[in-house]
Length: 140
Image 1: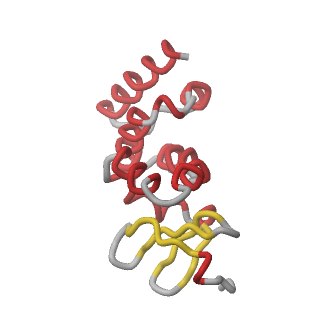
Image 2: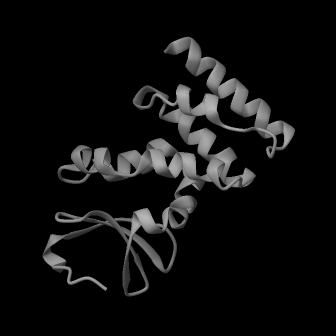
């Protein structure tokens, strides 16, 4: 457990009834699970429920706060979007593709997409993946 100064904490997003996303001036983005603060890098899977909301709604919530754009740029967006594919979870990978489609202008994932093994994916997800990245490769 860390010694965190509450004056340097800003509650950014309620993920569910026990999990909150905070921005800390000194540490960046962290999670609070009940009363325990957790480094996001250690628990990126805890952020998966964010994928169930619209990307632009999430981004607008964060960027509408003071210094929001600076904070949003520090959000671990790429690790969140890549993790469902790395651990081969089709439901979350499908939602990740929604965010990738909505945030495409901010990301360049073409090289990463070319390295993904598709064998584990259900056919519907493979097609969505191909549609998403065939457009991306034409844009880059």
